Length: 403
Image (cartoon, rainbow, N blue to C red; front, side):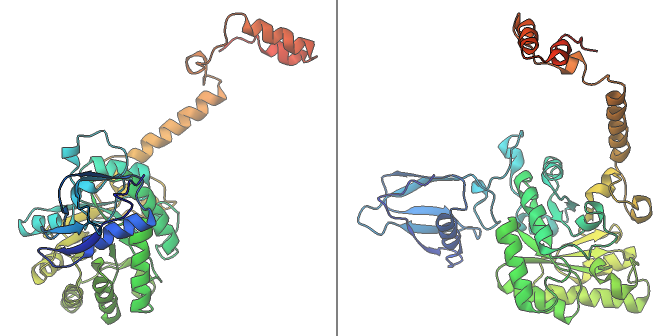
């Protein structure tokens, strides 16, 4: 619902700190495309409406007519990008107090990095898993192309499409209110040209409601793609070491940087991605010394996955952490570096087998789970009505006792 002031929407001016109109542009986009489910503009006396900018300044909105008013409050019931004011961001139900749900932004991640606080990252692929990650106060939620293996049942990540990722991003964004949302660009969506890379990244943010995208590899073309996406105003996370999308050329899921020459290559790729504008780097399946070297060689957070304890943070896959068994080859493909914090797969299996046994023995649903009752005399009336219709078997069935 949009209540317009005097029939005209306010026009945006630049932020008084960063001197850019990006907040105003975002607001205009939300209004014109009706991308918010509820927007209320409350007015009182005054001359200027001010909205906080991510740079710490404010954007002034002036009425185009002679009746200048001030916006006292803007409520947006929708989760959007990190450059929106934090107090206007919402997504999904929450049973926790609002103060515990303060939004994690790129600025906050950079602050944790500068202060030497480890950054926690976990994957999620749907609404239920996103809610769990959100309630665990994980810093970053990654909608990874690992969905192809742990959800879709493929042996690699290569079959995952951009449409797949966007669909999962949408589900995740409805369940996760607190964490910074990051999504993989799947194989084949950014390698051909910088134009393709930007188009794919734009779709992930606009259609998937993500905060940033991640690309794999540190070659010249990958750095060019990262630079193009960054220049389009989208935060990019790089990925060095083992890059699963390159499994064809790597010859399998093999650790990287195990020789001094290979290790130096990983460090150089990380530096190239940083120069291209990457705001963070994932470092996968390298010896701890290489993870430490990459972290020391760059000035952005490094997120390790099988890269030792010296990176700026750690990431693991949701299903691996929980000990779930969705993948047909789960015992063979669960990484050696993964610590399982639960055996949820065994609990799920026992529950499902218990359900089958109860159904087979007719213990379920029973009287305890048959809550709906007919009024006094209604069963006999139904019996007689069915008899009158010539449905004798149905009439007798109404008198069958519950197990």
